[in-house]
Amino acid sequence: MNYLPIFLDLRDRHCLVVGGSETAARKAELLLRAGAHVAVAAPVLHPGFGQLPDRHRLTRVADAFSPALLDGKDAVIVVEDDAAAARVVADAARARHLPVNVADKPALCSFILPSIIDRSPIMVAVSSGGESPVLARLLRARLETLIPAAYGRLAALASRHKERVREAIKPAQRRAFWEKVFLSSVAEMVFSGRDSEAEAQLEAMIRDRAAHEPARGEVYLVGAGPGNPDLLTFRALRLMQQADVVVYDRLVSQPILDMCRRDAERIYVGKERDDHAVPQEEINLMLVRLAKEGKRTLRLKGGDPFIFGRGGEEIETLVEHNVAFQVVPGITAAAGVASYAGIPLTHRDYAQSVAFVTGHLKENTFNMNWEGIARRDQTIVIYMGLKGLPMLCEALIKHGLTADTPAAIVQHGTLPTQRVITGTLTTLPTLAVEAGLKAPTLIIVGNVVKLRDKLAWYRPQVASAPAAATPLEAPDHLA
Ligand code: SAH
Image 1: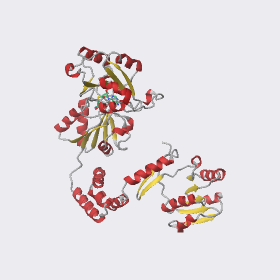
Image 2: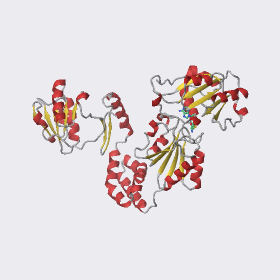
Image 3: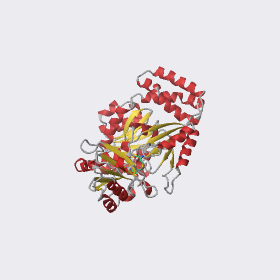
Image 4: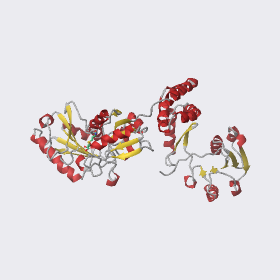
């Protein structure tokens, strides 16, 4: 983070604008809109100044800058082509610890002005920290279209009822109450201009809620996909942003964790048999306890919770303890990784079915129906197979696949550190060792692997990515 975004209260404060150009007029306008009194130092003012709203708060005080003009000021904006002249003002302002912005000269600024979406009292500020103003502006334009213009009225409605809600609803339940309001027809009514109906509905909600039972916790069992945050579902993201507590394990990548509600408590439970792991039974009971404390508990899992995720066990315990829950599917590793590796899992010419199997060894053997799995017309996707790779390839050959059956192993699929190694059942184990792959990895076996040569499209730049930057690291037994 190069800049800390803050919102400055300039109501009835005094600011100085140095410069009289059209750009200076736009800066002055911003200050006026924020309620400030604006003094301008410039030999002449562009006609744009004459059209500014609230210009009774604007005065041209001098032809040129002098340090005395900084007396009593709270912020300074400079619009000045001449870099040396701009520096004189910036230096003088900084010497007094006054926030100063110099248009188009980021090196001289102590603050920068973001692109803003004004839905007062809601403000959205977007900035690229000066790196790419055009991109920030494009993003702003998109946000403009996404955020209904009536958001400001909705916020004002909430503000009018803030006190009543504070009196009627206990602190622990207030956030949930407001979320319910903003997702309810109250918001829709405001957006469609039916403000008095919205007001009546909100009042009814406050009355109902005041007499209501304590908040009931719930567990959201959410699949976070294979690691790339772009592959989250909307529903996952919405629940991530409203959960009070997040219980996550190792396959959940940092960028995804960062998208959870900022003040949510985070509990790392690792994975079974991992050194820092919490045993599965304890995780199950932890979810029950958190929900019973009234918390909206997000159980965040890699991929899909119902595919090699033990999600079933976790919600069985919830059912036993009468805890409410919902399950959100995620993109399972097989789907995500295959797509990003350019390997279609089925294909009319090569594979009519897919088998998802676990390559996790139990007492050094696989407990599997090899006949059903080792079939020429089927793609086999092996989860947790890195460690057992040589034995897996051997077993597949022993049960009928030819030794030259194409096979691939994909490290960190969908992530910038993705690597794909292809070979055959005979060569893959050695190639994987030589490549020094890191977990998690996924193995894909079958003729569809041949298609990768033609269909590979995702080529992240990993050459310089140090191992330490890896967002995912799975324990050995999950490899
Ligand atoms: N529930 C998860 C799977 C959990 S088992 C899902 O639906 O995807 C853990 C295994 O998933 C890992 O050992 C690895 O085989 C696979 N896996 C998960 N994410 C992966 C990724 N980004 N790249 C490669 N394999 C991945």
